Image 1: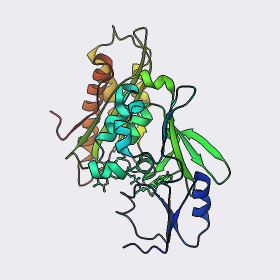
Image 2: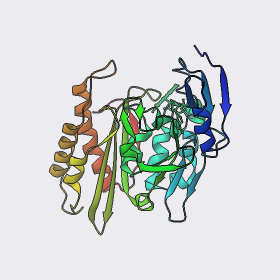
Image 3: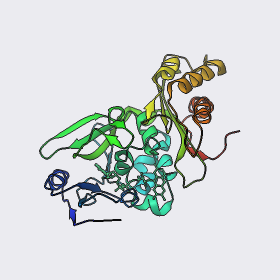
Image 4: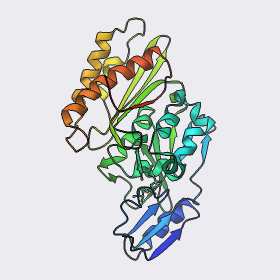
Length: 295
Ligand SMILES: Cc1cc2nc3c(=O)[nH]c(=O)nc-3n(C[C@H](O)[C@H](O)[C@H](O)COP(=O)(O)OP(=O)(O)OC[C@H]3O[C@@H](n4cnc5c(N)ncnc54)[C@H](O)[C@@H]3O)c2cc1C
């Protein structure tokens, strides 16, 4: 049950933090509210951030792609700046999150600040080296998304506001593929794998493999990435890709729950990582897929 005493509106990011700190009692930011309404108990007041000027999607002068934290998943799915970046992998991930009514209000910031291991937007953004921008009352800090998650439902934010995310310009031309393994289109993921390869002159300069729902926080499979970096596309073979997938499966820390066993999740990391590397290599900027079964 909601037991709200006050609903506050913030006009700027700094004001949002200030309103959060005014008390009395426990407060929370609210964006789309799709998660807040599921877990409403315990808040004396909320600070609405939808009018705080953090909903824009823009290219910076340097070519980075900036996603305001209060941008809805629907906007991410259809905005041309996003559909045209990294083969549209961010748009595709957004389009596979929840259902249409949820996506019309749910925000990318809310998805990340929930800090669920299964947050749909985390793996693709990790694979593209996203940087988080965080507002305090009088200052702003940036840090890699990889350092944002502390544990299930815990981030580095405390009472600060996530303002947005920046994707480096060069990530826009990476060859990408991702997959959300889920029981149904509206369910959260059992396993997510996102692969982003920076291929130049036929050689993999950098590889990013990000995994969701298989560890306390969304994670990068850095040992598997190292297996791919430096390889030439002409010489890479199925055994090397399969080895990288086995390494990724060894890096994750899945757990049993009512949706799937840890053993199943780990094996799906192996299968899906192998497939996403292959797609990113040979289908070049392929699309995210969602599926309930893996043959
Ligand atoms: C039917 C249904 C289906 C769903 N399916 C999926 C799914 O398939 N995949 C998936 O990943 N999720 C799913 N969700 C969960 C949820 O919709 C998403 O995580 C969504 O992106 C949350 O965004 P929001 O704007 O609604 O967050 P809110 O509910 O407004 O906020 C979520 C949390 O983040 C905090 N917060 C929000 N924005 C900020 C900010 N900028 N700075 C600091 N803190 C902030 C809030 O205080 C709150 O603790 C589903 C939810 C529903 C109801």
